[in-house]
Length: 192
Image 1 (cartoon, one colour):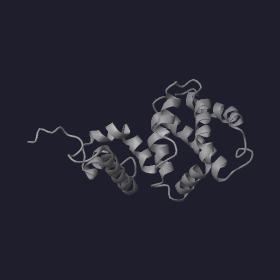
Image 2: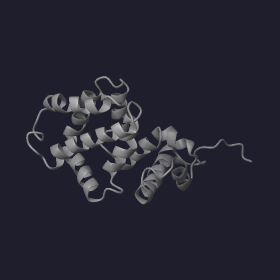
Image 3: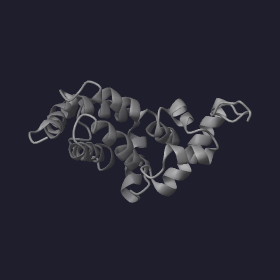
Image 4: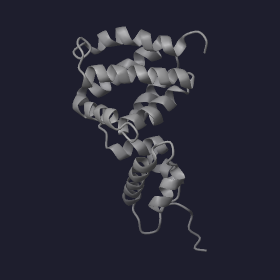
């Protein structure tokens, strides 16, 4: 017994460990999908201790984001939206979504187009399932969270892919005024 604690193998830098985890995650997410790939199996494929997934990425969701090299961190964004609870969630979600993705229209449009053409392993679908749905389900039911995800994906498709007017050119404030209450109604309607 060497006396070493579990973790990064000797002789590897933190950057090397992160890179190995990202590569192993890309392979497993592509082959098995986000839900079926576990942090433990990804760490095993990378040859590191499973605790390093949390240490470097904050969990499997953060690792998913790292595999995509996105211009923003959707885990951070959605966590900030749900942190303030259910009241006003609809407006916060729509505003955060639009203000985050409007500057990256082309990248987001490409993600959505990929999701439409191959939904089983598309990064946008994995973000919707693994990040957005999971975080929303902490403040509402899973069914309602899925409906909210559908609303947001519909808004994104209309604004960034199909470019339906006036949605495509409307201001963020106008879309928050229209979509915010609709999203809020799904989150807080009677019968929860």
